[in-house]
Amino acid sequence: MNKSEIYTVIRKLAIEAGEKIMDIYDADDFEVKSKSDESPVTIADETADAHISAGLRAAFPEAALVTEEQSATHAETSNTFFIVDPLDGTKEFIHRRGDFTVNIAYVEDGTPTMGVVYAPAKKRLFITDAVGVSHEEMGDHDANAIGEMQRISVSTPDENALIVVASKSHLTQETKDYIAKYNVKDSASAGSSLKFCLVATGEADIYPRVGRTMEWDTAAGQAVLQGAGGRVVRFDTHEPLTYGKPIFENPYFIAYAPGMTLQKA
Image (cartoon, rainbow, N blue to C red; front, side):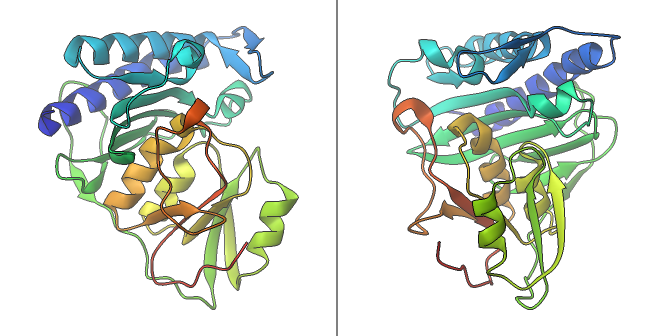
């Protein structure tokens, strides 16, 4: 697989999907439906999913593809595949809070090695390049013209004054209890995969998730964080979080900047 081509294609598709999402976001109203698991879905999710899926299948017809909105149709896949969450943070989208993202990742041998996280309402785009190094793209995010790329890197944590980022919509008591094990100077909340990106840029030191997530929720964010020097590990064993699991469900996990001591669950 040509990684330079992957980089070009996933960046372009993420921005184009973001444009379609914003057209709906800026409309007066849009329909909200419920999926079988009672999670919300909108026409924006479905439109972005269709666009990204068509683009990936056209560019890489032999590659395995998993997307959130088509997950019920996915048979067991290999451990090398594209995985897409066309609109991560649907609740943020519905409530017009802006913290939603387009996520596209490429997983090799169970590890996300490339990814793009695009937050169109926030005008922030994070991406790994062909060698797995992460950047934030500045400027207007033109699908057909790559803007200025600024390399990003995790912080050097101060264990006496950590900055924690947690979910806006899914902050469980278990998560609060785990955060209390650390010396926290400040905390931030963010929706969707932006939490990974805040750790990747050094705006936070640690993001613990003691709650349900799926592989499409995390793969692109994990790729970005790893490309900035960060790590994502299982909450229980502190072993790397891997992909291609049955039904694509993740265990609880911790995303963090190396240099700090992880507390036990």
